[in-house]
Image (tube, rainbow, N blue to C red):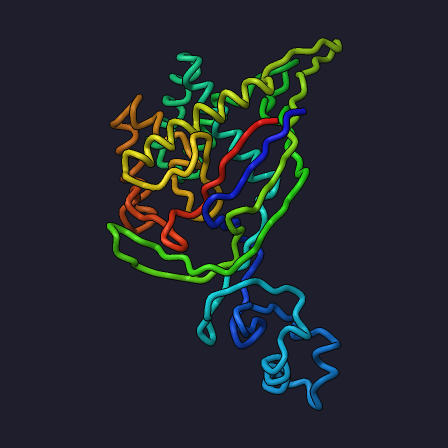
Length: 310
C-alpha cells in the first residue's frame, strides 16, 4: 500500500456539510463561531416556552455553553450564511487520482488518446450534456472487456482515509475576476497546517480461470499525479498565480476547472474541440466559462495542498 500525504498550504474548502445562519443556529462571540442545535434538550430546558425567539435569546447569551462545534472566526454580520466544510474524503482523493491517471494514459497511448477525443467530439455533436461529455471520454479509456464483462479499470484502485488532522477556521472567501472582487461568502475550511494521509491500494484483474493481470500499478499513480500536478501548476504560474510548492495540487471548492479535468491536454491536442466545449459550457451556465475567476481567502487562491508519497 502506498501512502499519499497532504499538507494544506492555503485554506481548503470541501463543502457539502450544510450551512448555518449567524443569529439562528450559529453565533459569533469573542473571535469564535459557535454552531448549535436548536432542538437540543439542553437548549430547550433553558426557556419557558419552546418558541424560536426565546431559544435564540438564550443561545445568544452563552453560545459556548450549548455549542456542538466552534471555530476561530473573523467578525461575522448577523444573518450571514456560513457554509460548513470538512476534511477531504477518500472519494475526493480517488477522483484526483482518476483524473491524473487519465492524463497519463492520454500521454502514453496515442491510440487511446484518439479514442478519447473522438468520443468527446461525438458526444458534443449529439448535443449531450456537459457531464455526459466527460463520461463518454472516460469510458473510452477506463472501460475494458474482461471475460466478456465490461469493467471500469479504476475500480481496481482503492483509497482509504488513514489520518485526518484538520485545523478548522471560518474564512471570508472572495470571488475575484481581473483583480476585482465580484462576490464574497463565509465558509468553514481546513486551515494551513492541516495534514491528511490516505492509503492507496491497487489490485490485479482476476479472470474466470484465476489468472491475474496488473492493469494499473502504484507506480503508475505516482507518475500520473506528478505529471498532472506539474502540468496544471505550470498553467497557474503562467497566469501569475501563487504556486506554493513543486509537488502541489488544488482540491475542493474553488480549485478551478483545470484541476478537475484534462482540459490542458484537449487544448493542446485539439484546439477546435476545446473551443467548442467552452462555447457549450458558456451557453449552459449563462456566462463565460473561462479561467479568469479565482476564489481566494486571505488574499491567496484556495485549495492548495503539497503532497508526497510514502
